[in-house]
Each structure stands twice: as C-alpha cells, then as structure tokens.
Image 1 (cartoon, rainbow, N blue to C red):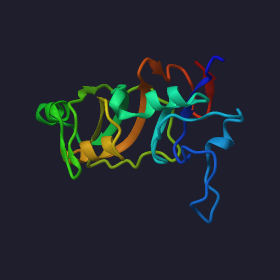
Image 2 (cartoon, rainbow, N blue to C red; image 1 turned 90 degrees about the vertical axis):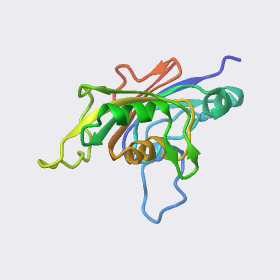
Image 3 (cartoon, one colour; image 1 turned 180 degrees about the vertical axis):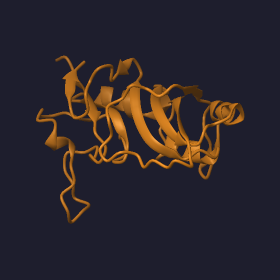
Image 4 (cartoon, rainbow, N blue to C red; image 1 turned 135 degrees about the vertical axis):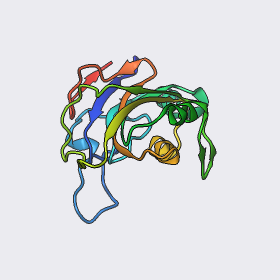
Length: 181
C-alpha cells in the first residue's frame, strides 16, 4: 500500500489536530478543512503559526517527519519586530541559548518582505517600530522554538509561516487548502 501524504497550508488560529477537547468555545481544527479518513499530522504547528503541515496515514513516515533525531530541515519565514543586525543573524546561525539548552545551529538570513497572503487578523502595525523578515531553517522541533530563538536575540516574532519541511514546500498552496504529495 502506498502511503498517503497531504500538504496542508494551515491558517492561523487552527489547531494541528482533528478535535478540540481543551476549550469551552469551539476552536477551528483540521476537521474543518480536511475530510480524509485515516490521516494524522506528522508534527505540530502552533495555533498562532501558519503554513505547511504534513499529514499521513503511515506511522513510519509520520515518525520520520516528526522525530527530531532524523534532523529533517524545517524552513520558516519569520516577521520580527525590529531590524536584526548581522550579529543577531549570526547568533541564530550558531545556536541560541534557551531555557532548555542551546539550539542546534540553524540557517538564518534576512530577506525582503515575502509575497504572502494577508493574515487575518493582521499583524499589529506600529509606526514607531519597524519590522523585517528572516528565513530560518532548523533541524529540531522544540516547543515554540523559532519564537523563542528570535526573542532571545532581541527580535520578537510577529508572524511565523512554516514554508517547507524537508523537500516538501507550500509553493502556491493557499491558506486552508491541501493537496496530496
């Protein structure tokens, strides 16, 4: 049997699971977007993050994608508050001291504003505080790791979009849409 692999562009405020048992109010879940029986997320993407979430019906593939020991690179487009200097970008590349230890080295670079879909709700705008974008590729998956890394070097994350996992990418996949790989 050939395993199914679904690429989903998870919108902001959608849980990376099919049911919501943790809230008295109904929150959006994967079941609001994907009606494919037998598939499960391979990894997680925080509710307040957007972008690529992979789902599969194959347990071994799910483990290979999600388990940090396989060091599958995950690339994020990160809008941060402020304009990181070269020292901050180099620090992200070398690894950042977090409360649970130093992160593995990452690929980090400042990029021009990417051509992304509008976010709903939009990122708060402040005239007095500029924002900018980074492309950050990590090979581990600690809880809220990218957000904690940018904050640790002095540039809090405003918007976080996972663009790719391994060789799989969002490409032209619109928010809330999915396709089979």
